[in-house]
Every structure is written in structure tokens, then in C-alpha cells.
Amino acid sequence: MAQDFTSREVRIDDVMETGCGLVHRYWAKCRGDAFAPAWGDFRLIELPPAVIPFVRVADVIDGGRDFRYRFWGTGLGAVRALDRTGVRLSEIQSPRTPTALAEYRRIVETKIGFAVVYDAHSGEGRPSLHAPCIRLPLSSDGATVDKIVCYTDFDTDAEEWRWFFERRA
Image 1 (cartoon, rainbow, N blue to C red):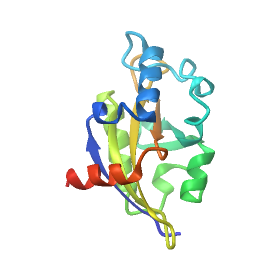
Image 2 (image 1 turned 120 degrees about the vertical axis):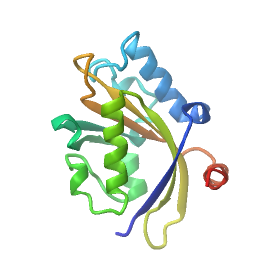
Image 3 (image 1 turned 45 degrees about the vertical axis):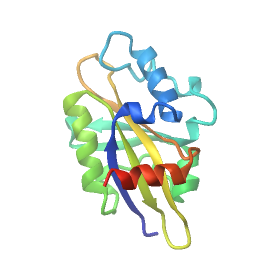
């Protein structure tokens, strides 16, 4: 299936009124004074039930050389017509893979999350989707990023985010 995802970075504050804000506030609560919470403290089951299907969690491999999806929400499977649980990011055949790898590596290096707005074309006969996404670090040892949690809010007004995406061009 042909997929074409592009994204534009936005301030985290720009997405705080969406489900991304719910995820960010929970992440901030879990982390306390640390730069990021541990995976064991960031419990997906404590997120609102409507959010969990659109979450994905990637394990950091070899300090950021690659990433493996440990969790791929069922809603993402429905929206994108695929399941990437257990798949390495480097194995994904997509024009966006190099960008995604660079974005994930940036989080590993800086230990700071960020937000984007996606323009997603998921294949023939499927409408373009515009949606905000947040990516946040997790750390089991309090020193290095060993997982990245991402959430894309497909429940927001796609037309409003299309306008936002195009305005950022």
C-alpha cells in the first residue's frame, strides 16, 4: 500500500488542547523532576481509553541506531491499514523513514520531546488526514532515552489541522 506522510514541526503548546495535551500532561506527571518517566511508570492503561489505540511505543536499539515498535495501537492499524508491532523502523519501506529515524534520534540525543502536524495520504481511495502528533522520551535509568512514546490525535478537526499544516508551509 502506498503511503505518503509528511510533517511539520509545531510547538508543543500548539497541540495541548488536543489528546496530545492529555498524553503530555500524564507524561509530565509520571516524570516528576526527571527529564522523562520510566516505561514502568508510564502505564498506557492509565491513559483515557480513546487515546490508547493511537499510541505507539518504540524501543531504542544501540543508542538510537535503530528503533523497534514494542506497541502499535489498534487504532493506528485501522487508520494506516497495517500493524507495525515488533517491526524495526529501518525495515519500513517508506519515503518518510529517513525523516522518522532522524526525529527519533533527535529525541535520544536531546532528551526532549516535540510535536508535529501530519499530512498523511494512506493510499488510493483513502482521504488525506491532517492530525497533531506528540513524541516524548522515556528513560529506565534516568540518564538515557530507551523508549519513545508517540500519540497521534485523529479525533481532532482534520480540516482545522489541514489549515494549520498549510499555514506553516
